[in-house]
Image (cartoon, rainbow, N blue to C red; front, side):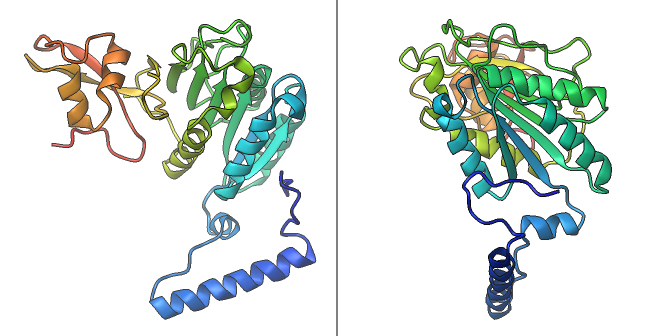
Length: 306
């Protein structure tokens, strides 16, 4: 099943697309032969070789494209990384859920499914996952951007959930909680220190879209499946910190005299993150055996650097 592009360019099914795709593969092969390296595979070739496709569904806020232009921009960035993307208004989550269920059942190599939504579109991303839960289909990642305060609980078929919101917002400001049987990765990122970022403009704030795209690439690069060591995390992003997303943490035990800052240095993460997640001062001495949760990056093993 083909997926529509969001930029209006001709797809691979057109005559132009077929000729252009063939020419690109030929040029890549010639360059690879000259350099002695193997040619890089396209997403289509990877899928044909048995690697799963990544299907990304983006849900706009109320007002559609007029008030959610940045969600379309985010979709274009995701597509530029080689992922299949479809964009919908917040009311249109039932049809894509049915479409992806049909494709999931048909494909021998099951696709990785990702949903992203802003405001009421964040609520729709969760509803999308709930519909797939009834069909026993997993969702690899959901990212919600300032969903409403009436958003559903996160269902158990979601493997990774990241909520980026502001607890100070009247519109939006939602902090969905996991369903009782949820056992995946869970992160809640509060932007309460960004008082100048209004609800409607959150998807366009500096660094956010790049962080979301990086998270998608991270998730697709690791095997799907549960992880019993994952610990939910909640933190507020400081204004002077770069936008970085974690989707869970790992528990560690501090030695006497260690601090959140020294523990953070061992794991290669910012001191503010360890301090914020554990609600301790970054430089305050810790008691021997004190339990901390350290955020982890999927791209690297969760082990100290030393």
